[in-house]
Length: 174
Image (cartoon, rainbow, N blue to C red; front, side):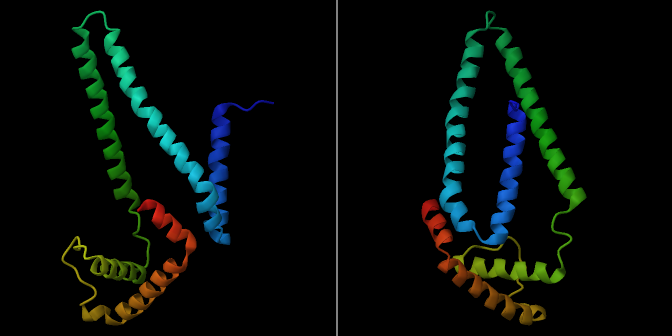
């Protein structure tokens, strides 16, 4: 029995999700980064390498095949119109979903505060300006949580510094 391409793609997606879940719970991230990730990067780069010339030459071929050059304006405006409509639809859908679902709103307040403190510690360390005027690090209301978050931040940094797979990933990005 031969499977149709769309079923192969769906099965591949499901297997990828299962692998990601299982490997994250069992601590197989180093194997995934060293042996599976490179194939994914190669595949994505090949797609990028194919997509741009394909679109460019499709446009060139379409323009070259036009018998009546006056149609170029109509086709161009229609193409631009469809592009703008789909872009507005995608942005509108994204904004609607984020305002309806409100991702992150179910996190406990303690987690939100800890995340904010870790962000401020990272911003201090990298000399990155904060995106707003809030400062939990200097607010006495959060003094105890700041101490705990600083300890956790340092532990996370040390753990990440000792994780060979993260160091390898960091060196390939740089």
